[in-house]
Image (cartoon, rainbow, N blue to C red; front, side, top):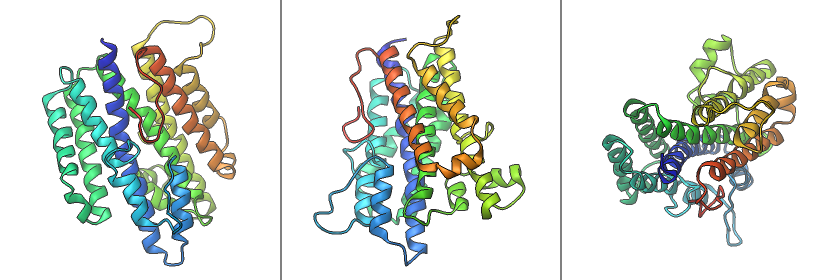
Length: 314
């Protein structure tokens, strides 16, 4: 298939997943700051921005909820924000118009028009985040229902899986933000994982044992689709399907090697080790996803320029 089409589908997958996961992370943050009146909102917001790979110039003042939402929810230019990511997904769908289904295009276009109108700025953050999650779920559902399982679908799922691993790692990294940390039940609910977690472990996510089990579930569970290990496994499977050639000796400097190293680094550590060193571990996952994305671009999109996670990403 054309490199241009493959690149567009890869980034549609990444951008829609980024919008969904950013909405989940911000929903956790807003609920946390509203529920705890004693929390240092400036410190927690600044730390969260760092986890998300961006900063805000407070102009000599404090950084609060409004500045955070402007930067990560409503900014139409930055592809690190929900609005910017969905706008970029719509633009990539326009470039690949001959490949994506009419339903998928109309869903992305309708979503972008609703965002561009500005009406969601007046809604409560929770309502906005819920709407974003619903719209991105519609896009993912349409992709799964209307795309043939050929290379087009593989590139979309590859992008979605890399972004999912990255963003779940960022969500878990917020556990260490602000000193006291976000409660694991809140993180599980934000991933839509709470009921699945209860069925898997048949117990609470509070206390030392509960925290260990929750970390295992979000990071290591091979069956839950939003766990880091599951997302990395899916990304690896997509790469095998796209480029099925067999290698007799190891792997070159490619995305499969990077993803495999990141996955095994998580799988062969104990939960205690992961929890004791959570933030650096999640940072390593994010760096691996970024390196794998760059390797995919160099291998399959030779005309694409270097990209970064923050504003200006194409």
